[in-house]
Amino acid sequence: MNKRYFFIVFAVAVLLVSAVLLLVINKVNSPTPISKVNAHFETTSQTWQIGKTYLVNLVIENKDIPTAATIHVIVDPQFLRIEDAKEGDVWTSANILQKKIDASLGDLIFSEGQGFDAKLTDKATLATLSVTALKQTKSTNINLALDSATAKVKSTVLNQLLSLPFSVSVSK
Image 1 (cartoon, helix red, strand yellow):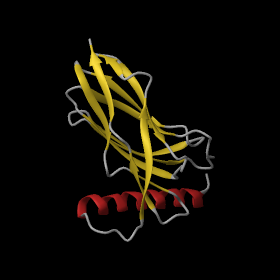
Image 2 (image 1 turned 90 degrees about the vertical axis):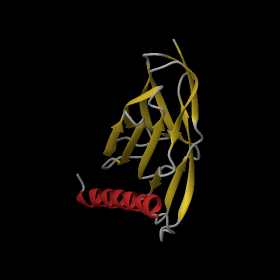
Image 3 (image 1 turned 135 degrees about the vertical axis):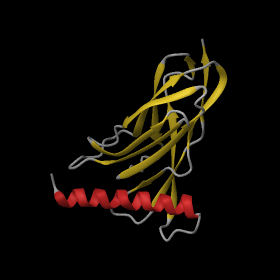
Image 4 (image 1 turned 120 degrees about the vertical axis):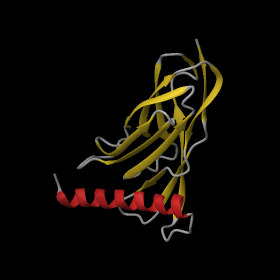
């Protein structure tokens, strides 16, 4: 394991978390420039059945693959439960920096970074979520919160990660 690379990934993670905290908590202009990276949620079906668990991918749209990312996903806990989150396939390996799921609030915070000596792939899935349908509804959303962000090692720019809400219906 390369200690220098570990330090770089750790520094990017600290930068990412610090910048997000500045934006969210203080709501002040950050000295870190901000840009936007678009993403979207994908799954095999938008019609789900109660009691079944579905895999939902968060896919980066413009192939601007980061070195680290923090995603904050929110669902209505009355209808959906986030069971798990795993690294996507944008890197050959990843380091999970944080995974916090609060099922009662329908809240997930997931931070990951490019693995040691990992290479970029030609794929764009940043993370894969496991989500269980709990109760029948015509429509409920999987939302990416505004404090989701990405960063790169050789960049001073923090990228806000944006996605439209992803709607699913749940039936018996």
